[in-house]
Picture (cartoon, rainbow, N blue to C red):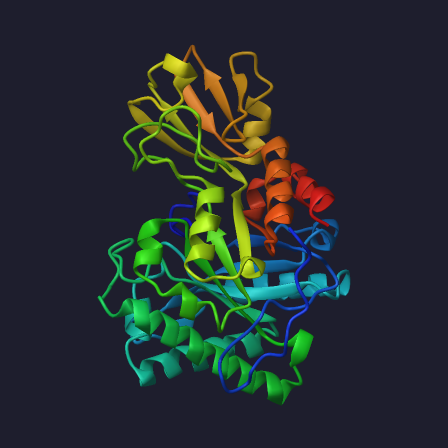
Length: 382
């Protein structure tokens, strides 16, 4: 997910009916649902989810809770409590809607390594997280550790993070199961445990996903931000397939899914991430209308509602990369390139989810949309 402090936006066959959740073993299978697919929206800080939008979603993840240096999970403001209450109230119009608390994110993953380090620190983390879940009457927890075994935004990290990550998930799962039995939340109504996972080879190299997925209900793949201010050239930031144009990075959502399945994660647990925002660059070399070219400055993130207006301006040329299944906006006058998600690219991804037997789609972030992308997701993944 994106840095919480900057606001930069950054994570099929039907789901098979699966066995019960083992209370002692710390394992899980993707939960049964009245909906065939997951349609999950991350909500960051400000809640602007209408009742109609709530009906189009199966899950909402509220971002973020923080992790203290001692490994406790905390909410940083009173507004968080008010926001969670507002989200919980949406259950009056959609009783099956699941509300989860997302922990960490880009800016607040500083001390995940501390939390995961020992048996006692893992229990401390789990107890504090479950206490927040119960206090706010939520349906599950989502861990967004960015990233195990990697520095991220100047985070504490250790070589043993890979194994400790799995141990942390197992510990949280046991505490959720224990609390679920006390609260009568078992079977299809059990408390959920999910993660947001980095869409990179580095993430897989620093985790053991064959073991880590077992306590989880879903793995949310952050299949976006493939290009940005951190890359030396422009490029699609959320393309479904590798582009035909030579690109040294060759990143794509489809490749990420393949790699996670090879790493041992069942397809039915994978939730494809899509961005409700775009990324732009200025001073771009005009060759190939700016795609996969050098640039002078990054223009950061653009919410979809802004891009929908820009796309109507004559100065911008809309292009569709049929190989990558991804769009761009190009302004030759200002040498500005923007790569983003559109209804067309989102439809391609819903088809991919169905054809590959994935669990569904999640997006970051709800407040960036004007309703168009969510409606597209609902219409084609329902």
